[in-house]
Image 1 (cartoon, helix red, strand yellow):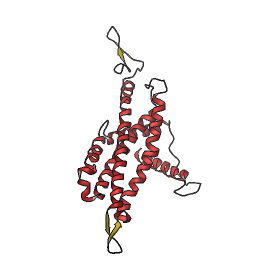
Image 2: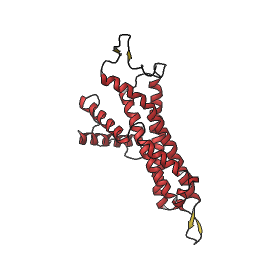
Image 3: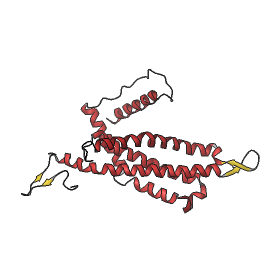
Length: 235
């Protein structure tokens, strides 16, 4: 059923398919990789959180000399440690809590639309699966490296799991599609939408509402502005 879900060969030896174009059949076949990319991205999120938990716990219990002259100050109190770990925690929260959850939810709805789990996926979802996989796995690789460094010599011990985390982080960056190739595909398709007029470029201009980074509308406006500027530069 998996082998002939896209095309089949009749008794006369002729190829038959509901999808007439070769490219169309090729793209549908590639869609089978999307679930694997989401699985790898989910694994990357898990490994990222594991690395952060280990590093934060270590930084909160590893004591160094403080103002009293005694070893009573956790290294997490120092800006060096905070500036290395806190941005990674924030990015992990956004990628996992917003990005991954949205893509997985949308994939579940679209893939089961026909009740069989084989429904055709929209082009936008295909790009989301590719893009989120690249973003998550690159973030996992960077987080694992930084967290290992922030644990000092303890990061080399097998008991602290960084060997396993780094191994997985490197592997998932190329599994089910090299990240750079995936991002090239995303950029090519999005630019193609702009050229064909199927999607309009975000309008470049000032935000009319309350300009504050705690305002979701303002943050969305900034992201749209960047998307528009980058798209114009690439065209």
